[in-house]
Length: 182
Image 1 (cartoon, rainbow, N blue to C red):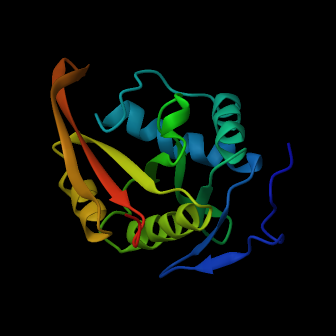
Image 2 (cartoon, helix red, strand yellow):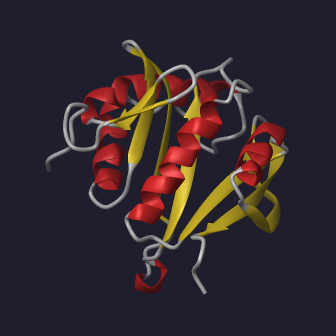
Image 3 (cartoon, rainbow, N blue to C red):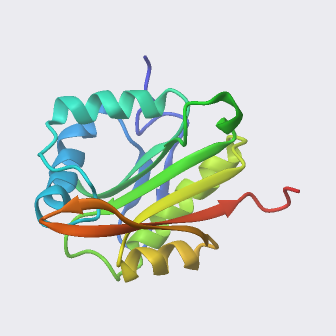
């Protein structure tokens, strides 16, 4: 499968403190580094074991076949990533995507997530998708604030559906509909 390169037609979007570009499979190790910190230290992902870069590359390839995976970088340092993939496998869900964003630990609250996620939203809607769904392990004030800042609306709250670090975790879902759609 061909993946757009940074110098290709996708180009760069300049953020507050970095550049946003389409991810390539070469970013898998940096993505794994960011993601594995969250696996080991937080409940925001329900994965329990570190994910090797090879597995991240496979996940990226699957997403990039029909959706967007973006990275935020400063120089050669990967600061974060965001992507949208298939929401559910059934055909009637095709207009709907599920979005995800992660920043390197310590970079929250600087506007980087807003810039990155807003670019993902723009690109997903430009591809013709109608909805983005963001799932959030709760409580997570920063992620809730980010989603609502971009216009996402809370549409569901599941009680104690995950268990990590010997603790039950709620999950909320926020939805963003493409503006102007009936």
